[in-house]
Amino acid sequence: MRKYIFSGTLISAVLGGWGTLQTTRKGPRDWRLALMWISWVITVVVAVDTVLEQSRKVDELEE
Image (tube, rainbow, N blue to C red; front, side, top):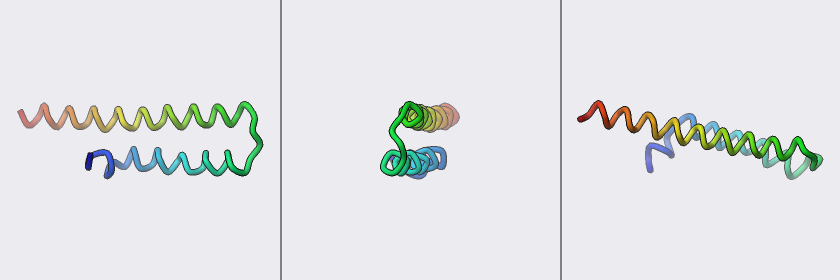
């Protein structure tokens, strides 16, 4: 769990969601908002996958 919490890629992805959340609260609701949320979800998925991949590489090196 610690590898996710302290991962720079995941932290930046979650912080990027803050801007999307603010746009949702204050901005117009149109198709661009849906694209922003889809983009944010994809970013978080890629960040989690990056952490998993790095963890697997470290595990392989330790064996």
